[in-house]
Image (cartoon, rainbow, N blue to C red; front, side, top):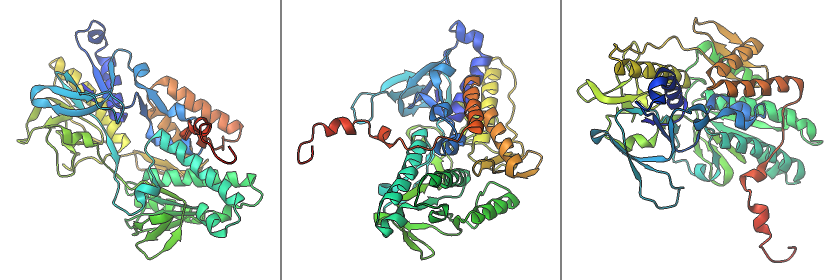
Length: 442
């Protein structure tokens, strides 16, 4: 049983499906994957979805299509008791009361990933937006374009200024990529407004640390910072958001200004489902693991029939410190986990995870990016952009999704990208419900 259908969960299932195809076909082995959503969201491409460069459907991978030899349960895990090899899952829609279903298993693979790490900032829950799902990416694009419409139509200067101010909190890969892509899109979109100019837009990036892109090399982080500031993006380092009450942003450096857009990308935390298990966790809430991807018991020995990979797993690197929770480690760990699990079933020795020098990249808009290779080569500009796209295309699960994304990019080179707000899809019943209202003008 695999818990989680994200990057690590799906990658492990795909590799196990290859390695154990004969056993799965004749039912000697049954592989079950439990995930609340019936699809994987490929998060590294969400910024391009938000910018209109990729169709939202093309960055999601239907689990049942990708895993024809597996049993897929679209459900939430409510409890795991590994001592009795039992999980309880709830397939009912949220808000509906149903008794969880008891699902026994023989071998457990934990790969539920991570969730956004929020903060008790006043006003954040009411006015903030996340950036971890395809729905949030589409909603953010719609919202940004709606703010341009609002600013173009209003005669209230304060409302116009607030509508054209966009605040992003968190300057990791997700925050920098999302801001850069959306700034590039909005700059292009202003050409369609007679009374908007790119210089009217204000973009603010707030980061608590003293540098952006904490996982990047200092040189590439500095280059990225310089490029963002060259594009008149206001980057506030060593600064935090103190309040967003009534859409009035209050920063720790004393700044105070109104903004109608607040995007929260300030880090991640382990999936909450880990607290519903009897598995050993470290001080950060991640599952303690051995280099072979087996879960480590409190005494340091392998916990029988228990494995973990991805953001939820504290897998030691060559220094003994846990690997950083990112997509690159998740994909590599998931593949090795599947190979080690198949090796254990066949009585072969297991292989320890040895992370390679990380090769990272982030897009900064059309034809702009920063990247470095496994050999340490640093790239910027168009070369980095091509490398970034090639790298993400290679990591995207399933050939069919790769072809669809590649087609989006090819058409994007021939035509302008789609810059249109479809905000009505977020409230599909609004028009229908308005037919039941009564009163003047109805």
